[in-house]
Length: 221
Length: 418
Image 1 (cartoon, rainbow over the protein chains, first blue to last red):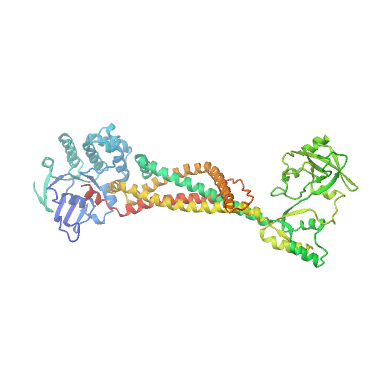
Image 2: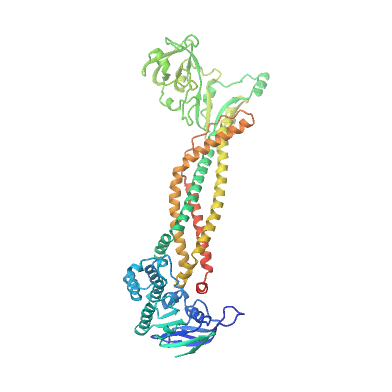
């Protein structure tokens, strides 16, 4: 059963503006890593914001585990069901990386014996050691910030992980490390990972590659 | 719990702004607390003085009416000592203080300035409670003077080699009366009492054969009414007891105005200052809160994208405000407790100078100002007002976050940041 189904979804920002997403239909399965490639302004980020529940389709529906996203409690959906990796990080800049992760655990009410230990472990896996984890985010490099964003998206163990240009600020070494980790999360822990990007390199990790152009989605490989 | 923890961390993370807000609330609480405490104390002092003034009455005669009475052949033109003492028995009175002076011939005693002054003055007397100190300032001392006892002046004692415990004799006409000296008072301050004074109680005076109940009354009663509203009924009662109607009950308006006038001016001043401080503080705090929340809109968006409910975001901001404002309240309030008294003293002094100057500018004799020493106290009323101000600050600083978070949607972060 698909974890996320997009059914004839169209979207326009304003009633009189042109459609940025045009009649898209697609099913996303758990245990697979999807890459959606497209140029800028092709509708990639808009599609992700629809999946994240930040905006709602002007037509059609998005189903998460069979339930209409519009009917789900949005805060709970974002806290527990979905992990989002933003290209612009969106971290609490004055907090440390560790505090960002701990807060995500608190918000999602994740049950664990030691939240701090869990956060350290995950940060270690994406390449952030304990020392860096305790530095304020604003003092970290772009790459370190991006690594923390990845860890934050995964810490609540969501079924669906979406990523917007996750490798934009990463070195090729870190990119490879994170992509391998995301692939492992998808395959070994049976999560659905959706990445939108215009990087061909990222696409090489995909189980399925889809292309988006002028708001229309098409299967590539 | 984690909302509170995060709020505490946020205060630390934004320590520059937190300190600024703390300083602002500290200043607001300090200024308003001082103003509230002084204003409340002043108001209570005014009420207290008004009560005292309106309950303290003396007998004075109206000259015109007295002349009319005399022309009309009115025989009873003044009450006797007995009548004056009877007036003091009224149920409408809280207390009565009698004072008076009686000339006596010294008996085997040297007086000071022997040649010029051959008499002793038998002092002001007192019975019942003394609420405001008696007319010549012997209030406390007189409470130690019992029947047939007296106080004498230091110089008089020296001149006659008298010590405490000695018995002296006073004489008027053929009557001689012994008095035991129970105290010697300093008589440096000549305005207080002359050096030949012997101070006794009313009880002793009434015991003396030399006191005549049916003489025209020379005792000066000061009546302390139970309530200001009893003035008229008490006067009616005195008239019914035979007080000639050219006597009236007199309230010491000059003294009252000398004290209460400046106090009332200060109440107005402090009240106006308090109102303007509150208005100015409210506007400033709203502006600062708006600026502060604007700076944190990014953080609000992130928390929303992480799935934190708007209500909890608002709660976090309110916790921050509570912590900062509570700190500001404690610090401001404690400082206010320390500085309120000196400020009140200075304000009182300045007010006294202003009133005197006002009269001098109009080439008038300024009234005798006997401004009280104002003891600034923290009453439940002022405490309530200060808590009210703090609550207002909390509402004001929270209102912006409530409004801002309510209307903000996380989608904006994606659009704006990208």
